[in-house]
Length: 408
Ligand SMILES: Cc1cc2nc3c(=O)[nH]c(=O)nc-3n(C[C@H](O)[C@H](O)[C@H](O)COP(=O)(O)OP(=O)(O)OC[C@H]3O[C@@H](n4cnc5c(N)ncnc54)[C@H](O)[C@@H]3O)c2cc1C
Image (cartoon, rainbow, N blue to C red; front, side, top):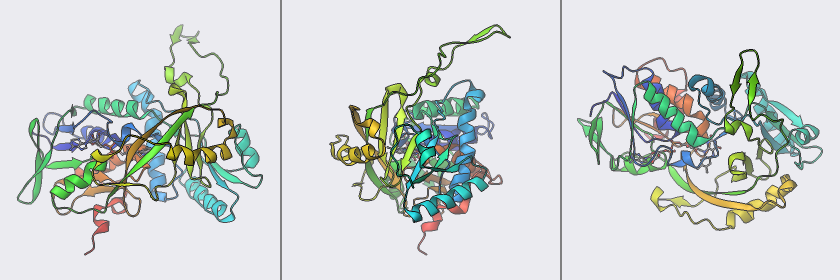
């Protein structure tokens, strides 16, 4: 098979790149093909909390998160299908430490300059926004009302469907791709389903990237670590008025709201910096996801397949006192399981997006360092612009350049 652009990997990044490139290519003469070894979203993207939060301390990333949020929030209108965007708000708790508060205020000032709707909040405001929270009287935080989360698998499937509607083809269950290099250039991939020839090959394979690059003799300073998250019963959300059916008398029409829209969260997403954890409600499963904010000291994996899926209670035991310190309302909430997943880290915790200079025609998109599901629409747009030689406005190519780690 022949394509103009061949994307390997069907996570948040691969599907977003498929959409952004398919929008710009003629499906008959410039086909876009995505191949995935498992099912769409079977890597990190299927295990993420998919928190949507524009509060990056870095200006470039904050601007991209702002742009991506518009895509998620507008998806319902665009495709008539919800990606489960829930505008719960995101509350960052900075605590009482003067330096932590100064850093938070500087971040909020920078984000406000970018047009992000965010403000510094005091203890009384945090208690009003998040009933049941425990904060000291002199604590400060920030609140971003438009933040929240999406449902990751729904999002990936919707983006893939949209890409197909522009003529892209997505093929799952395609195994063992080997990048074909001729005269020093990437020219396609050979797989269990035969050869796919393309002058542009995009590796969007998340934690599998180092293995594929190693076979090509390309070194990138990527580290794959194993992360655990734990779940517990979600406290009761605030009562909502009955919204089972919305009747518009003017046009004599009845609307059935999307079931996900009827499931309120118990509280905003909480990013608790002093305790190093985050809490994200999952109303559909009636549970709350609890994870870390940092990745220091996590077990390193040589191969993604060596991920140990048996999660002990170690992480839960670490998290429980911290959760109760911040949200005592979780005291009687029953455990609801644990999960393990992969995080792909770079030394500067910035993603790697762009051309592999050693092999023209090969592009990589990886190293999202545990954070950037939400950036996928902006990454897709930026990479499409780069591959197709258009002015690059959606990302800063230098900021993400794979060459920034070169030692010579
Ligand atoms: C527990 C957890 C929580 C997270 N929480 C958040 C959050 O709240 N907000 C946020 O923005 N980000 C979050 N992230 C980060 C986010 O999930 C990732 O940055 C993002 O999903 C990376 O997407 P990706 O497409 O690059 O990789 P992946 O989703 O890993 O996709 C790679 C795909 O490539 C496929 N593949 C691999 N090798 C091959 C091959 N040889 N041939 C064909 N296909 C192949 C895999 O099967 C997989 O589907 C979290 C991550 C984790 C693990």
